[in-house]
Length: 393
Image (cartoon, rainbow, N blue to C red):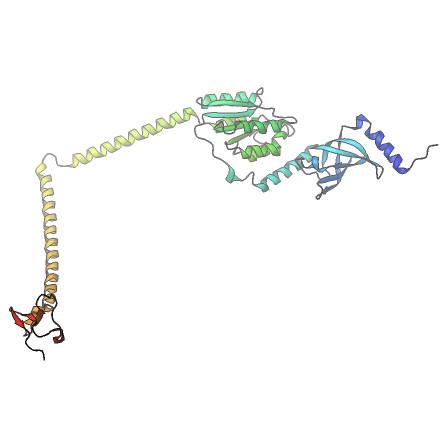
């Protein structure tokens, strides 16, 4: 009989389980329970269960960080995992590397989680929406090259706006990995077209699931080129619809939104032409009636009216000028009287005289400024005399 320690037993069982290639890569369906998000490490710990059994599972941070949704208790999922043994406790568990929602309930929960997260980030904010061009020259299309959607879009555009060039960037529209290719096609066409249409026909929720991919929604929102989302039928709504600048209920409606109708434009131009012609004719008729109202048969009457108006303006101008001159003349006389009252000649006329030293401009203000022998000019109001200082007292 062989005697083993507990550690030896667990190690042996671990080697047997992990050595089985069938258990190295398995897909398992189950319901999530006892879910724990270890925030410090980023690892997910949970159990997968069905009606009869349960198994422990762990999803390490390196894989959990790429998960596009947050698992919840009660959510049905499909996991890709390997089976291993936790040697310390002697229990086997699943080491999960990928997880997908399984069933409508889980898909709806994942959809709401992504929608809430992108809404909080402002990815769907209306202020980020770009207007569609009025007259696009290059229209990009992201869809399957073999489906009826591309043919429908081309037919609508060729009928409505044949001036535009349609550029197809083909991509699968359902199945694993389709979302990544769709996002890359958006980035490829971005900047090379005036508008981009991304679309596919109707289908089940599973068929449209790739258009709920978070990476695709971010690529659509980040595009500098306006994007029209035309996915499914009118009642179908995907995250791609929310992220796009414009949502169309069907691919054909998306083509109609992308380009104007040449026939409608022609009809509108014709209507504008008729309006301008009628407006011009009305203006001409009005001018003709105004001319007819003038008394051209007797031009002397018209000249008499103009002459009377001219005489009125001349009289008004003359009166205004005379009033202005009288006002300025009165003011000038008043200023002249004030200047005359301040004139030095008026002072001299009252018996005073101004004394100047010969050769100097300023008047002599004091006897102290003179010495005997100085020659003087003495100015009276009616003349001037020459004098010489004989004595100073």
